[in-house]
View (spheres, rainbow, N blue to C red):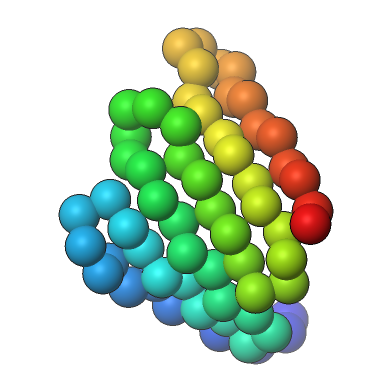
Length: 62
């Protein structure tokens, strides 16, 4: 089993800094409404929880 490193810090209400061994990301948004993530590799992800067992996610790399 490989060792992993992952840490998440709450900077402000609704803003998180996520760090792992290879990259970092900033996530904005909360439980209600869309959540937007940008990481150091240039990827942007928008996701939102929908009612029931469904979820919606769109990823755009720039």
